[in-house]
Amino acid sequence: LGEEAKLQCAIQNLGTRTVVWRRASDPNPLTINDVTYVSDSRIKVYHEKYSMEWSLHIKDVTYEDEGVYECQISSKARSIRRLIMLRVSDIEISGSTFVEKGNPLKITCNATGNDYPPEGLDWFKDGLKITPNDRTSINMDVSLSDRTIISTLVMLRADMYDAGTYVCRTSDLQITSVKVNVLNSKYTFQLYTTVYSNAIQ
Image (tube, rainbow, N blue to C red):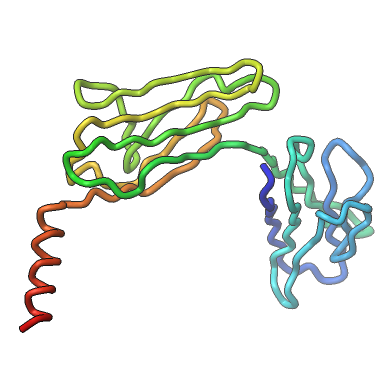
């Protein structure tokens, strides 16, 4: 939501045929070759000479932009179509990306649905699903009026093996991630002391 969507369509041996982008629900074209046929200035086709890629870019996407788009290659003899689904998500993750060993690790994921909040939300670390235990808790808060679900992941005492990539994924497949670094404060202090001692010799 609010970012730029890029829909890819790769075409080999285009020749004299034309490339048409449109919404599958609308017979009118958005673009033909590199010319835009709608008044929406957010929409543009990007194509480099001799490249196979004809990418439809939509800036500042909104929920109204969500849907199925069609990349069509047309000629007098026939047309070839490729359908691409654009999903617009509103999800963000926040929290400390650097935490000292032994201190709490806390990150929060906030996701908004189209008409209703997402039904659920899961956390993953380095591809493995996180489940609550005596050291790890996951708190969930749902707001029907705001269509949001907020989940907070807390690890009471961060250890070195807690460093890694944390992924937040909703039931409607909105996904975001953050990389968390765990610092060994004792090692860092020793390193700084050594550097400072060497500097004054």
